[in-house]
Length: 149
View 1 (tube, rainbow, N blue to C red):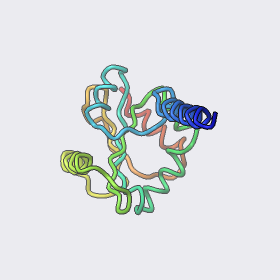
View 2: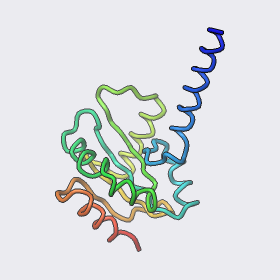
View 3: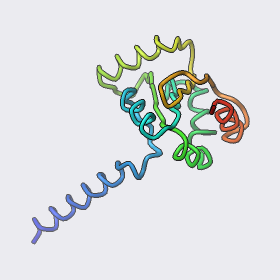
């Protein structure tokens, strides 16, 4: 009986993890550039590429807190964007492949500082460049809307 309860607990935990990581909970940021571009082309959405130092850059943390974590932004993103985080952390571990991809993207888009937000159209062409701005989600989304053409 004890073994049955343990197995049931493990299965419930596994089901929760699988559910929480499914596309239905997709206000998550992706980290795979090629996959994000493929999804953007398929869904005809823009790609918002956030170049960030998520665990050390004060302005990056502020942008996340004041814009990206707000429901207004998340609702907009679900309908209009594929979210891609290109992170350069100091303390968080990353795979060698992810570090290499992020360095290549940093060079490709000539990133000079953080946060830098590159917006790509659904074909992967750069539509604009943003950064931190005052005014929360409303101001940020207003700038994003100007890039839709």
